[in-house]
Image 1 (cartoon, rainbow, N blue to C red):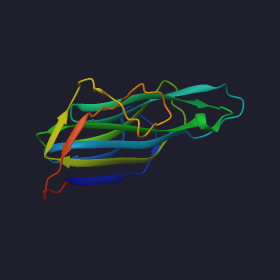
Image 2 (image 1 turned 45 degrees about the vertical axis):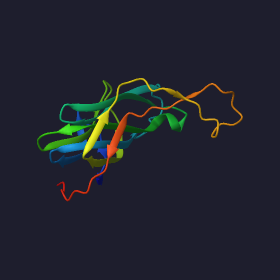
Image 3 (image 1 turned 90 degrees about the vertical axis):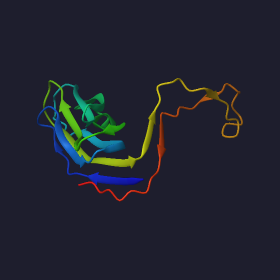
Length: 169
């Protein structure tokens, strides 16, 4: 199993599908995590509270994960002006492909800034992706004082390690 981690410089979101972190991967099977912080960069006096909408997207060819979020501009609560996002994808590519962590802004285009965009990639030799509903499992050892209702556990991906000397650029 090989792993790669990349932290890129951040910046202002100035256009749609703006790339903040990018890696080129050779053909293979991968599990990929994207993470970043996004914030409203300033608080302007008498402006009303406005939600700054954005989309975060992690892409590897036709495989993608995305989320739509919103931050409050000019809020009294500093916690409403920033958040962290995390996305993940898994799949196989047959040709050299770029993995991109991108952001798009909503209609109001002021003051969105991305910081610490990161990509983490794990190359694997076997990858099973399941869409089946998991079986409920009871786990009284971790929650001894809780009524026995059962806890759900999902196993979405199964990763098999390998000894490979393939390097990515």
